[in-house]
Length: 121
Image 1 (tube, rainbow, N blue to C red):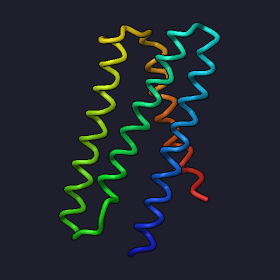
Image 2: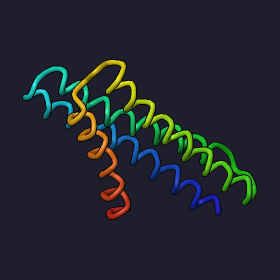
Image 3: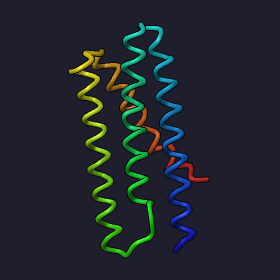
Image 4: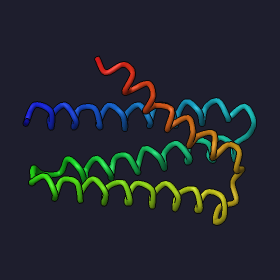
């Protein structure tokens, strides 16, 4: 049981680090289009990475029973989506950054899930 909890923590850390790397890379790629596009793309990726980090901290915080673990997972998912949607709202409506770049950064950071779970080793 503790081995799988440790493996989950390692996977979550690897996932957040990969999402941060992708956010930086997508921001650098959008730098060719302009400064605002680069900031928008990187911010979209960072919002996903922050949401994943907060969800992971919530889920893997401490060892509890089955029902409490499920409740922590649901709370973590709600927290993650609140951060992602709130971050996207800030990017688009408060700072008025380009939406295509923000959504591209968001999708690129979420694509990390496919890679992380496909290649676990």
